[in-house]
Structure formats: structure tokens, C-alpha cells
Length: 116
Image 1: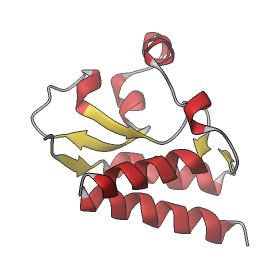
Image 2 (image 1 turned 30 degrees about the horizontal axis):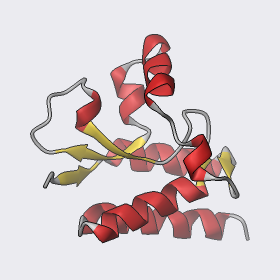
Image 3 (image 1 turned 180 degrees about the vertical axis):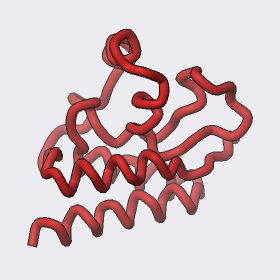
């Protein structure tokens, strides 16, 4: 099983998106989650660093500047999706990636508190 480290740049980006109210509270994550075609289109016009900032985790041992390096996407490359964070939390919890699970949980709390 792969191991992951929390991507601190992604956590910062997620907080900035929340602060700037660039998020969706209700969405069907299965419908808006970036697929391979959307990922490839994004990479045509953006850097790997920007691509990485949309992923809460980095895969240990995977080469830089490959899609396999980046895991736990939380947005659609325009906005953060609350359901994306929930999906990250659930998947990380399911596979016992505790650090990623905690990062997703903390971002969910931050998002929910920012709306008060």
C-alpha cells in the first residue's frame, strides 16, 4: 500500500480558497471530481506546482511531476468542494492514512467555522 505525506502547500491553498470564498458547499463529488481529461487539460496550461496544490498528499517514492506523485484531490481546479474534502477524509480514514485524514478534518472545520 502506498504511503503519503501531507502536502503543506495544498493545505495553504485550501485555506486561501476558503478565505476567498472560492468553494462549493453542496456538490456531487462523483460528478465534479477531476478525471484524467480534466487533469491533462489543467496541466497543459498550468505548472506541476499548481497541479500539486490541489492535492492534500504526496505519494512517498513517486517521481516528481507525475500524476502518481499527487493524491487526495479536493477541488475541481477552480474551487474547493466540501464534498471533495469529505471524500479525502473518508478515503484517508478507510486506509489509515491518519495525517491526511487529520488535515482533511481540520480543513472541514476551518471551512465550517468560516461560514459563521
